[in-house]
Image (cartoon, helix red, strand yellow):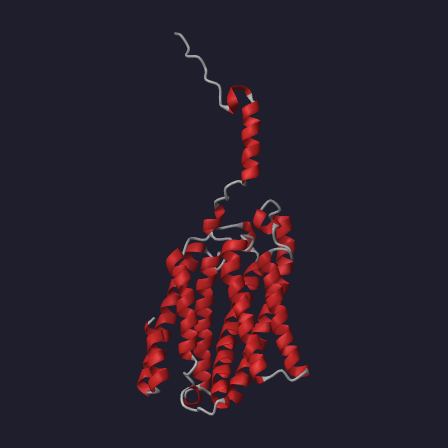
Length: 305
């Protein structure tokens, strides 16, 4: 939160001192987050991103690292306030739900699982950065089109630089997501043999909402890269696609994961089975009613001594 305020002050005032303070606060926050992830890793025996809440926390950390790398290599802090807005918003999810404790499971011990999750989280971080770049491109484009070069034009990199940054960031994310989807498919095939009774593994198919939306996300970014090379969809069109793609990522990462499916959530909170559906409950009640004594255990008569 302090880094967000500092980046906002720097974005408005453009003073070097505010920029250095913002970077320092973000580095301190990233280091503290690294320490927390390290402690959770020691407690769980693996990097804590098997559950949805833990995965969001790790994603926030990766997005901060990716932005800091971009800031250091380009010496440009204009994107910081936009990136920090995403980080602060998403970090509220693990802050509210708590870190949780991840269980040890044979399903989670396969190296393909960790490759799958790490690659997808890295891809989501790249797509988040690309979305910020795309949004800032559109804001500056509209200001230039209106011939009102006052605010964004003087605070952001040029349109050409933003377009190149967007293209490279999307390509990195696309490569990581391709690796994540391929390793995930191989891992599911092996998990069906090692844990055939796990309902989360059994639910993993193309019809699962999370997997379907992930494939849709990959298709959107694939189209963006192909359209850029073949039909010249650069600049504003590419920027819009980056924003739309990341909106789908957030939909899948938060809403779908928490409310529409449990197939990919291996956190401790998901170890407790959900309540049986009403249909199953009524069937059980009918069967119990037909049993002697209503299905209740018989009371034994007290023994006489």
